[in-house]
Image 1 (cartoon, one colour):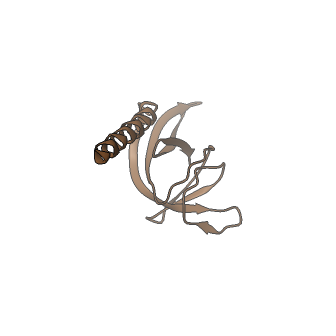
Image 2: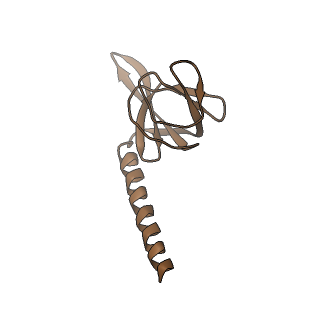
Image 3: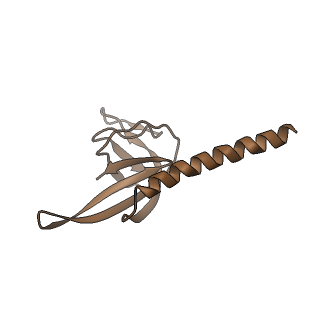
Length: 114
């Protein structure tokens, strides 16, 4: 009987997590998935590398397992170790020039990046 309740609890957690991810994806209609990367950490203001993900802060550099980086343009706190980031892009016209906006989704959170 206790395994039944554990199974129900896991199912509920899975459904609520999936709903949060769906919400982030619903906000991304019209965006294109560019890449999927594993976050290895971020670079602190003093230049030292931190090997966890603690969300975004303006101008925080996030580094990925493949050696690439992005810079945050938004704020949001989240803690995770080696989460997967989905990188999205969207091209728009601004004052007659075509520019591309970027964002990443990590678990159920969205961050503006460059």
